[in-house]
Image (tube, rainbow over all chains, first blue to last red):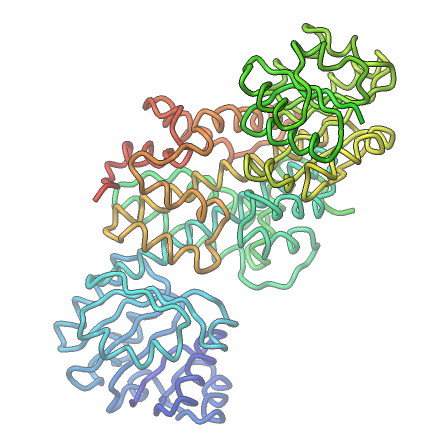
Length: 294
Length: 294
């Protein structure tokens, strides 16, 4: 297949490289020229801009940051009108379900297929082709996308034929991820305040029914003063914002997500927005007067 | 060792049986005569009441429901004054850290050792001797308790020499467990409301960073109309109550635990207090108008 790829960031670049290595002709565009060059070195083709990436392509994969960027690429930079009639657009950015639905409607009117297909699994999942892909769209869109999805994803979930369901599933996923980080931080700081060694407390918690993927992954970094940033506090300000917007739109009260959002907002307000999301514990430590450092 | 054992319920009976099978002389007391008879059949000795269970014992293990029952056994029913000087009391009930501390002070004045040692792992952990034991107390108390703990526990954590730390660790554990059930319910009902098959949504969530022990264990029962009761909604009304009391006492704000408590209270108010704690999802379904049943 001939595949346009826009958004060659920490996840997009390895995804595009994997498609090229699997034998597809991948035309990549990004504002970062180094990323475009890296793709070209790995067997892809450099494109000057999003429209150029789409010339003669069977499919366009969008791995940009959000819905605004995706719309700018598709409708502002001319990607959609450059794609041949009948081509497929796969949107893998994290966006509000309503935005994915609107995007689908607009593209389908132009004679294009659309798959709403956000991903999770981070840079590691992107590199190893083991992403979780949460997809929805027509049978035609799935059929056209299948060769691409199988290369990128370890688990490809088909959530229905309505665009927006994929993005809603990603939203639900981020609800749990964000809330679990806040719960892990809340528990860890309570243990520390009570005089229990917080690392030991996390070990006890992980050994039984209190365990979560996030406690295991973020817990240790909660106890480091300046941990590596795998995903920033402000990413959860954005993602829990999408969660609460989706709840508002659907008229669904989400008390746990709402409480978690307040803690990420507070952490961002403390100046920690660019730090690792585990540092939400600093908002707890500040408000409760807990000393975390030995 | 000669061990008194009071509280032969779903967890206490298999624990007492395991101690008897390991060669200890176990004197068991419970209001339920069938449980006392079952222990006798398995090699234990029936005791008529708590004081009788303590005659000549090296240790007393309390596996009653809460601090009130533990105090009633120790000081109302004469267990503490029956124990020989220097004997050990192990309190494995779930109780407020402050109550465990007060209990320790009172027993130490009577010349007894005390280990604050709540457990988790449920009936299965009790039967297989693989409980997680969260213990604190003096080196003397730990030394005396070690042969007993090693039979009952898979993981025995030593949290410090101050009574109350064991109960605080259990409190922190229950914070995470209760909050995780609420988060799993909140995510599941949002997926259902949006038109995603909730069982499929749970599968997607468990496959990645959103997973928790509770989602895996309670999630499937959230989608059953009348699931088996492994632990009731009202147990978390009690346990999250202990969490919030501990937070109040220590002046630690716990927004995630507080939000979870409201949902368990609401579920109890809907008449679901005796149902499986997974049914907290019914409170979400009621408030958000979500149809969970196919």
